[in-house]
Length: 369
Image (tube, rainbow, N blue to C red; front, side, top):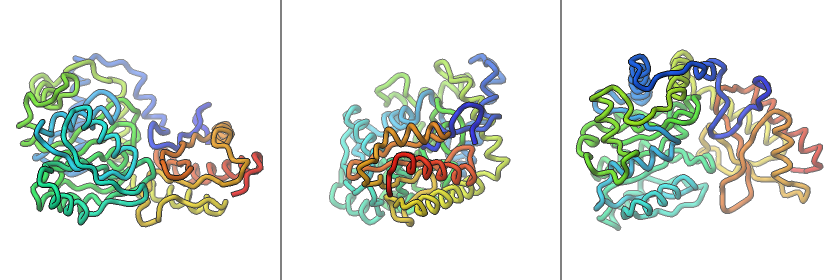
């Protein structure tokens, strides 16, 4: 159950990684070293393959958390005179709104409940109401609740109306099927420390080659200019600024394991089994999920907190952690919840053990669900 002395992370990232992934970080790399630069190139090639990017797309890696890459994508790909539609059903959608405000880019917010996925019809209606809209910034899997938005339908309506679609696929990349060959997606953003089961520290943007080529000089940021990052890498094979060498090395090994496991279909199937085991066992304890099953993604599950007056999340969290599992607080505004992740180098056995630990802690706390 425990990897060394460390608890298992049932969170949306960082998450529990394999021993091979951690061991990959024991070697030091020079940032100008030819072997390291070749490794970066193979990582980018394999990331493109996960979503069938082919020759029409390029992968641009970027230092920092996933949010760095989201901001870099918006700042580089959206013209100053553009207007971005943001369907908002959670905290990470709201973060995109904050990024647009900081960049002083016009936006239209489509407000939704935290348990309500956006629909293609609602997006099309927004296009009809406001002809200023040039782009859509869509969170594929809103991790604050685990809500899945219908990406294929959204991409189809954006393609039909000739709107540029930028997708935050932070928690879906590698776990859920995404096929860029279907059209409609102009840029896709994710990071190393999510469903690829690497460690945090590197984001990446997969973007249409012709779109990126038109973005020279657009970014208001030096460090987060995707065009400059890609152009410099093409010219020199090197990162512009000091790369997260150990993170890239860990991601290389994590991708090797991802491919050996069977790629996205196998990784997704393991997470689905984890999710089913978790939800079934938690319901047996009396917990209810925040989301309906049909909109629940198999990455992280939000549960309603018990209404028992003995319930204190801080005490519950500490006791479950002592038992070997790290959970995650809720990130909703409407009700008190907590979250349990289904991703990482874990399987249904760890999920069952985690719920057993939760059950024991509830008894110790005197909490009834």
